Length: 94
Image (cartoon, rainbow, N blue to C red; front, side, top):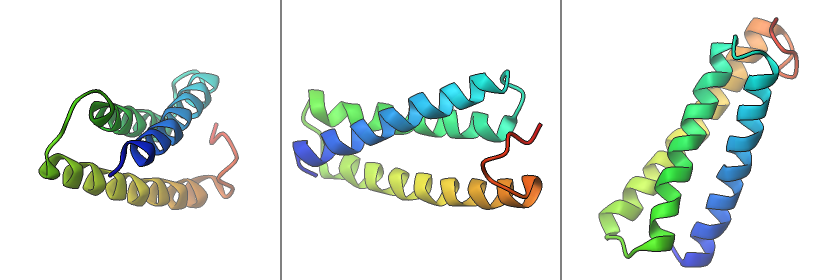
């Protein structure tokens, strides 16, 4: 993973973290499904920030890739769950 790729991925996950946190706060922190997204994006931001500040091993890069794939799967699973619960993923579920 090059520095440019890490910076782009970090920027995307930072934006996702801000939007997830703002959405969760907009619902008064009552919807637990949105809390999962906040925690997941915070973990991704933490993992992706490390290679920008210090050299990392190949195992760490592999861990980052695995976590990012898990994050993508979790996002899809939560989207489908919310679609079933709410009927529309853009509803607030409240």
